[in-house]
Image (tube, rainbow, N blue to C red; front, top):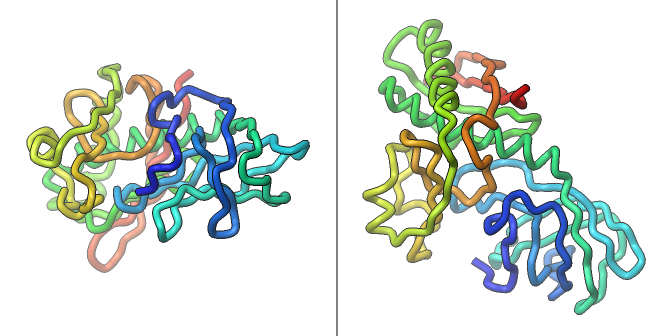
Length: 246
């Protein structure tokens, strides 16, 4: 993990703007000393599209095309405009509605994983936020999926209705193992070179490793709707969308 970029999106997920400095160039983009733009760390096994927005630097309004972690653990920002010089000041502006939509979906994903384990289902691959406020999971159920799927979504909705807070903490691995709720990826496989893990507590039922900015309270998830139920040879591919609360 690169130590050069301060991840403001974890410290203050509601922050929409920030003043940063360009600290380097890498992988076709530029590095910042601090950023509000989230990119999923692949080591945490919870994929989702990166944040978008724009950067004002050296008289240019640079539309952000992509934010990603490169092979050397650097958080790279790529735009369609000219690369700002190292040392240049950069005013960061987040696409906040997109972030809020993905934060709702990501928190819903945590609740769906918890609900799946309550039903003794098996997650067959890492879940992902795919954009548009939607989560995709592939799972196997012990009962008829036609009955299990509506129950799964309803149970996750019940958890969201508790209106409990969503909080984050960093914990040493031994403590994280005691705190984490069941999931299908072994903790040893998540960021294995890191001595501590970031955990997200989504109410009383879900504590999972997570590097994403989430909602502050489960009530922000809104209504959950099953959007996809596709039979596969070994299970069911399902999609669930989190709508903004009224």
